[in-house]
Length: 303
Image 1 (cartoon, helix red, strand yellow):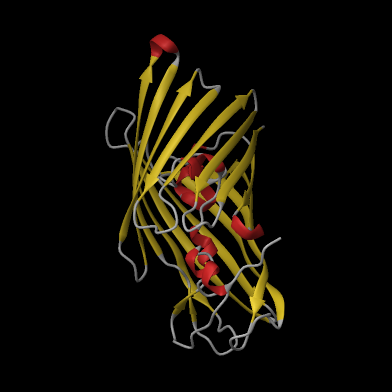
Image 2 (cartoon, one colour; image 1 turned 30 degrees about the vertical axis):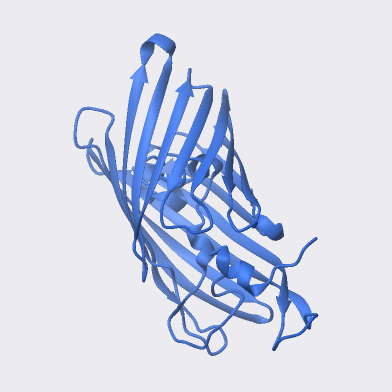
């Protein structure tokens, strides 16, 4: 098994703060919060802000919980290059004239080489962990507008140092016309994190605008879902995410996605299968710079 160097971690954009502390105030921490949740979303290049209407809405847009009619369970496992793993578990159920959701979001980065200067061999290998636990609520305001909120506890550990904090996500969903168009706006990670040793860490505050439109083909029992997201992470430029999903009789789906502004990745693809109350999804994203590939596997259960 190969070992992660600090430069590889930075290129992956997962551990810009996990692997190296530059000493400058205001570094962006918990970069794993930007990775997304779910193989379906990953296959559509994370163009999912206006699409999510299931238990994964606890991550993407809590307003999407307004569509929950039954108890739903959702789990995702992601394997990145160099044995980086990411897990997401969520549950949602109707309650309080809307729906509530619970989720746990974690990332583990093993075998990080620790050095204090140039050397042939590292002093040792360490690991880093990010964890986020959230409680979400979403409801319909009227037949066109829905809103939601998520309260999150966030935790980061690098070697023997750790920091924790709290954050809030706010989201709305809107259906302006009597057609399948959906619009959404989400603000994520509004909060703060305690210092990691002597370093001030800022959460990756994110603003998302999303749109989705579904075209039905009754003759073949299929549909085409098109989605577009514009995403602005604090201290970075807007990026565009475009995704498409072709459904066949609601049982089989083909997905493609394209994103801009990422040096390590650009397109993604995947498939989905639905069996009665179960849904299985797979997403694939190739990485540049010989970093390997990302594989996402999801299973959801609608009770």
